[in-house]
Length: 361
Image (cartoon, rainbow, N blue to C red):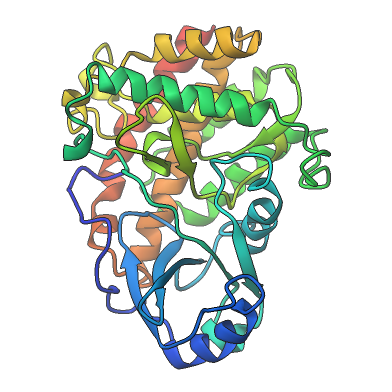
């Protein structure tokens, strides 16, 4: 979310260390079926660019590489950071959707690392954050191609049959929108400060009055954005992998399109209602949001008459997420320095949500 360029891999931040000995004793015997040659010792590094869940690189015996995911340290919001859900999704989905990494093992024993965690394969590729990776700069019109590849990956995910993927029980589509609204409203009440914007309640009320009819039911990622993807630098027209599946469920697929639009910068945005990284990604050559909507409509044939509602909902929800991240830093539970100032973005996001709701009328 932040504009500062941070390496993709780094030493583990202080306060976010894992107990290597306990992890090694638990993990290595359980990897024998999936990776028969995996032998210790473990080397642990951290992927530092995520904003919520903690993600680590495990090098096993100096050759095999795996990824470990666990919730952030400290108090967690109700229903958030669901590692068991993410493990279930990836354990099934990788065989049907090749952008999903394969999950290997899950642990719900707090004696190991103090929280649920799971381990999955490591995928390699370029993540586009605030600048084009050097390896991708020779491609013509690369920003537009990356954007359309992401929309195509979203459409492919939404075309999957949840039952055929073994995920028919992943969620309850009936009442999906109402649960989303009420759940995020509760999270806001738990995370806000006395001086937090009162407009958040007003926006919630407006969203509740204009709830759209369900379009259809699909597997939804629920946090789909450009920097949750990896690309093969030689092939910018196809997403290589997608990560951060802990909020995946069954519901209206327009929640994913709305989420993507909420994060997407657009030159037409007024200065007081900028999205994340508007200035930082200005040189990427990304297309405007209208082109993403048109691409999704062409790929799916979906009726997108209510897409602005979903965009406003996503902006409102992102404010809640930002507030949660900042509150964890205030409580001393997060050691990530980016979280000290992340709440500075809230007024702009609130303004953007109000603007989109006015345009949705």
